[in-house]
Length: 420
Ligand code: HAM
Image (tube, rainbow, N blue to C red; front, top):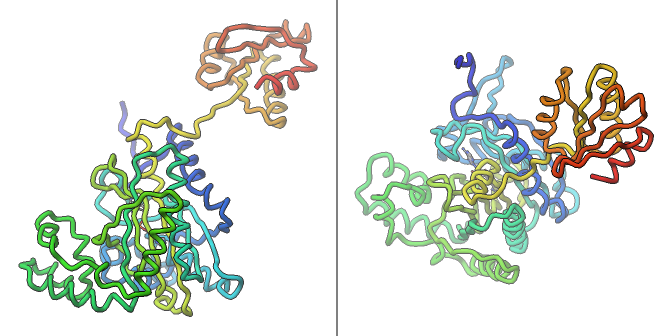
């Protein structure tokens, strides 16, 4: 075997059939509940001004310090391939004045994201998300709605192993007291230099440190839910009771933090245990201060992004069949040049009539062409030679039973339309 001269860049991969179709179907199914819940579709560029992410996602996050694909353009602009979608969508809302119309604004999106991470199974440098954001309301029903829609999307794909982890990070009313208490606790621990620095800059991030010795030391750290103000607690309790009334199971996880700094109040993650260490198939939360951080007016928001790549891996881990692989319904097998030109015309007519159809190319003999018909997934083959054409018929063969019938050319398209 020859070694190809070029390969997909490290941490990226190609989607080829049938996984390509499966990924399309996964994205469609993840988005379907949003489309039937009144969300509008938004598309933003794949790159943005670097400062949008530095300010929006947070200067001290791993994403901004280590993982961004940033570069200076020929014109001297500093831009970054988007590592996430929330800051860009909010930027687009503000720029297009959507926040000045009827509120809330409910949007969904789907696309490619880029993070310079250490590649491993489920963690890529180019990955795909379906996301949703609700802007302009502090109503806890919006937080609950989003969680329910994500759970419904996973269910629609047939997944049974997705768990919902739920927390509240509190608002500006609760966070300072918690931050101080956590800092005091962390300062009492014997930590390496970098972690000790993080305690001073962003102590909540330490809770996300996966090293076992740190997790052990955190066992008796103060938890945010003990510090929630009455209104933050009421918000959290409403989200919890709405989820329960919608029949959505969740696990309270008071140590849940996420890798983006914009979160306030509700925070959640969807995890799947069949994925190893990269177990988060999706996540999100409320971000009531993000608009101001990127220079906008006060505009509360809540949203999530579901990772399409990991969702597909989760389906494979559960042994679910790949979705979206349909193939064609009819396959034309012409024998000889005259029949080939006729079959080309037939297939064109069938496609225009809404029947998925394909044909054997390259003047293949009957055996090779029938093999191609079987591979195509079609239920029926239309076998036709010069003699059939002279008699005004084509042979329609049921590929499952092997039964064959001569059908008049005049009524052939209608006949096949009825059959499939
Ligand atoms: P995130 O947790 O960084 O959140 O990403 C959401 C999901 O994208 C993850 O749960 C995971 O499934 C997938 N994902 C992230 N990084 C990778 C990667 N390197 N390889 C494969 N999949 C990955 C956000 O991006 C927020 N913008 C979500 C949000 C929306 N919060 C509020 N609104």
